[in-house]
Length: 210
Image (cartoon, rainbow, N blue to C red; front, side, top):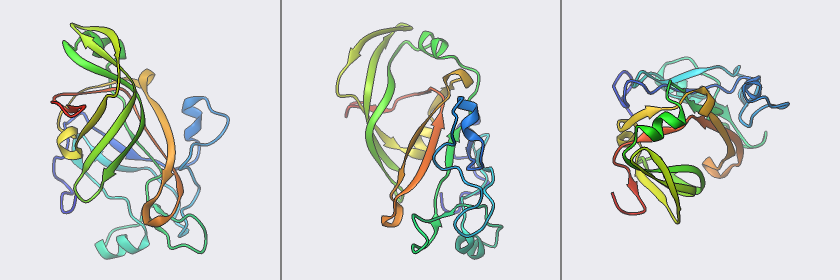
């Protein structure tokens, strides 16, 4: 993403946001806050909604005080550390893909040949290259607009910027959900959260075969 501020990096329907401000759990009817929510970051900067990608255009990076001073922009509250003795690093809070209008049923009905991935067991992303791979927990074959038999050992792999430009459908708020995890950047362990609706990706590599 270096040097790409203001450039198109995804299809025009893609909006990606990081919003670590308090109160995010309410939209999921939770009696507690999501991982990655906080009042201020570990450098004293108030948490705030940051638009990363808007209508497919890269708008902002996440910043701590160090990176914002180097790039001569305002810090946006993403300096986080695992404990007070550790150095705060730029880190996500609650990063999510904004939902659109497709229901899951409509996505399936509109898909002639595909695979429905319900959840993921594990995976990795290589930030310098954008390469990723994830193992699916539950997967089903889609044939002529119908959900068919369950499949085994399905994995997805690809390059982030390529995949962001291959999204052909984005689910609605009803299909929007979240997952919690731990960011291990810099050898630290910090709670984070991500979210997205169902999406449809054209021509992604599945299980080693296109």
